[in-house]
Amino acid sequence: MGNTSFDTHNGFPYRRPVSLHGKKLGLLLSTGPEAPGFQHGLRLAEAALQKGVDVYVYCIDDAVAGVGHPHLQALKARGSSVTVKWPC
Image (cartoon, rainbow, N blue to C red; front, side):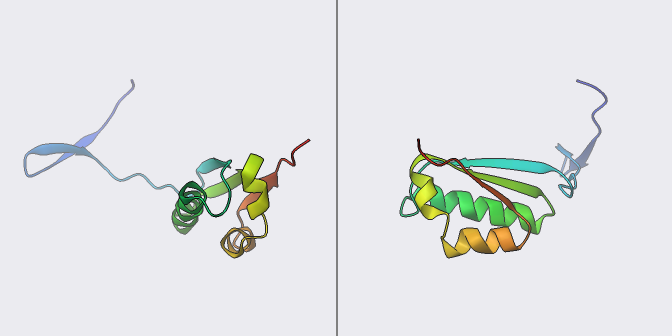
């Protein structure tokens, strides 16, 4: 597993925080914009962007209907990559 360094807090080991800046996160959304999963995915993407993560959102199936969703468009404006797989 490699060399892992732990600190202690109140006698319990914990791993030092790792910077997420420059890491990549891909999210595959397949539910429509009215579904809780779609909204949760957008909130996760937002949180990742705030930490400096490169976010890639892929919309397939019912999520394609949410391409124009204001929150998704705001994420795109902030630098998130949005890819759409149109149904055949």
